[in-house]
Length: 73
Image 1 (tube, rainbow, N blue to C red):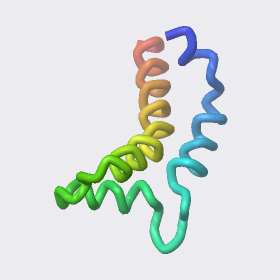
Image 2: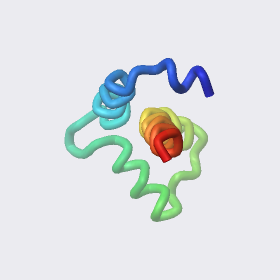
Image 3: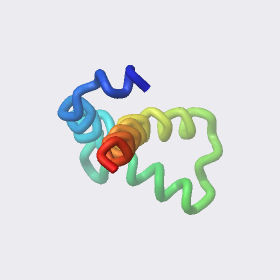
């Protein structure tokens, strides 16, 4: 967990806003992949890989925020 603590929070937020949401138009790519997942259409390996790549910054952000909340409490 020391690696997680060494990553600055502002860098993680920047990654969420860029890699996590890109391309922005016509809709954020992660949103498109989440809709595919909900509809059951996320079946091709390239789509699953793409979903994981766009979701990784958000997972990292959640892990950092959860770790910070647990450290305070």
